[in-house]
Image (tube, rainbow, N blue to C red; front, side, top):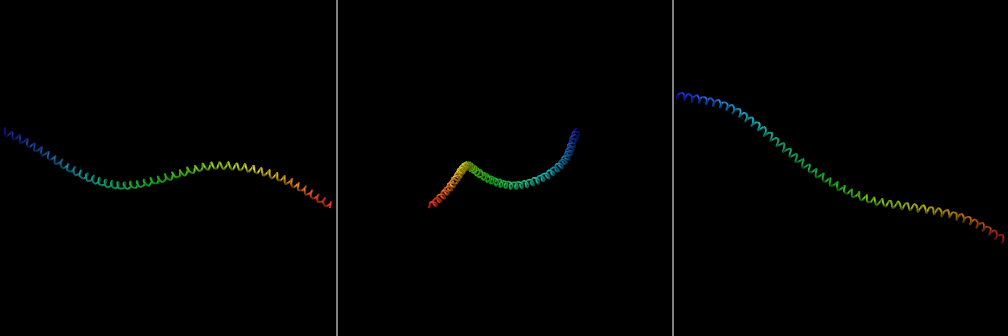
Length: 169
């Protein structure tokens, strides 16, 4: 019975030992597989670290370029704001000048209308004076004609009187 028990124990021990050995072979294969996976993961990690390093370097370069562009854009923006302010000031002056010119033009228009009325009045006055002068000249010519006729008559009378004085003498 004892030998049977010991043989049964030995048999179980051998089975357990074979199972452990089989597990150890599986574990060794798994361990080798895991080691290869770890190596692959390490390689992948190195690649990713290199990629990340390049990305960070490129990103820093882009940030530096972007920062320079940003400064340039700010300078351009300030220059544009100054130019807009200058143009607004110029436009404001232009509008003020334009309003002043418009105001002067309104005054000039009023003055022009007044001058036109004055010119019309002067024209009317000139026409009246021309008519008056024409009448005066006509009357003067008529007087001159009458005076000439009188003068001729007086000359004739004078000659007649001279003749009569001569006869009487």
